[in-house]
Length: 300
Length: 307
Image (tube, rainbow over all chains, first blue to last red; front, side, top):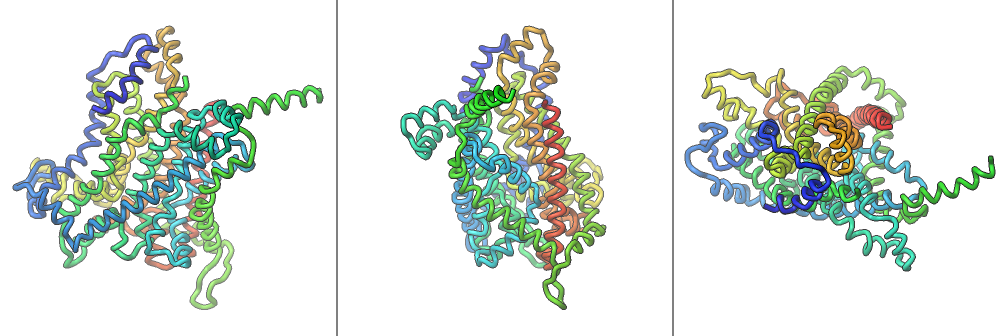
């Protein structure tokens, strides 16, 4: 419901401009529907199989329900298995997301604003350096970062995961393009004439106009942090600091080691519980992030 | 002539400053927090990597400067080149398929001819919110011929589909996971670029009686060229850094995916199970350079066509 209401003004604006609204096409809907089905089938698989017990997982058809409905016992087992380590991983993930993605958003918004609205020495080099640095493989950074952090004594602590999460080159790029259009230079000049300082201009004049872009960057850095696997994998040895991703994979691997407890039903249910918060965030906030991504549309 | 030139110059400067706010150091003040952390987690490790790649840690003689020796070794390392070939193959097959599907979906949703367009937009995007770990575990289960979908289909239809986790198909299976994860993300990048095309262009096209395909070719695609270039660059970088999916599948497909399957996995296993930090750093630097060269080439070509 939220989608249609959010979209309607834009559609109306567009329909008023263009001559006739194009006719809807069942054929095109069906073809695009194939991509839709492709996107949703694995998620359906996950939901269906989270209702199966470990035995029923092996005996029933993958895309249909098995005997018995074990979703609630699976959820209970997921949360209580191994003294509730899953909850601990959940809390860790929240910590990394709040501090890491929150910080990344603040840095990207300020940096993007600077690149969009100021002309300063060395600016041209900044994007080249950022893009060049992004091209270096994660391992190129991971190994030396790990060695550096272990000399600083912060491996196996939350800081080792949080500090690298503070940089979002994509967020910087997005805020840069967004702020270029969203904050009129004339308005900033006017604030300046009225005697506002740079900081005041930023916080009181520009920040409100940047809001859709900020939500967008926040959401995307949340996803990046929530989904991060490689970085915590190398930085953390102590399972007590694992985020959900590394934890779930350790459960999955445990089944493959000899004598390990086979808990694929908990891996599946845990996976479902891991993605629900993000999907909920995207669905609830879609009005903001979608206008953030396409906010340039006001500029005509 | 000289006099006119100097008169024109300030006017140019005024024009430039109306786009940007003002030439000053204040910009650095806002950029500084990003720059400091960036230097710590990107530039310092890169510098350290370069340093590591020029040294060797030997049992006898300890840490010593070896110049380009590590690089020579890497360039003659068949395992390294095989992994590079693999991600290059992945790049030329998977990235075009993914971007093409994403572009199709974006054009279809933007074109206003779909029933329930907003449902399509959000649903196709949803897989992006799924962590690579969960996506890989999920697809890994489905690929499994024991209790996966493939197994179920084989059992119920009496087929014997090839094992998606066998050596022959596993790269395609990884490509499928990555495509699934990122189609919606790229679709969204294209879609938001399409939304900012001014309506006046469409009006002009409508007056000219341009067909839908002509509008796509003459207006929409040129207008989103920047987004296409950016999406391509990010996809190239992503392909060369392929790690999560093969690394997780490696545990269920041990004979199809070894620890040197991609350059990133090779570098990872060199340093974390082999303790060969210097050689690992060398591999990573070479891959970084390779990625940069290709990314910049794409960017330059994309920009030149735009002019």
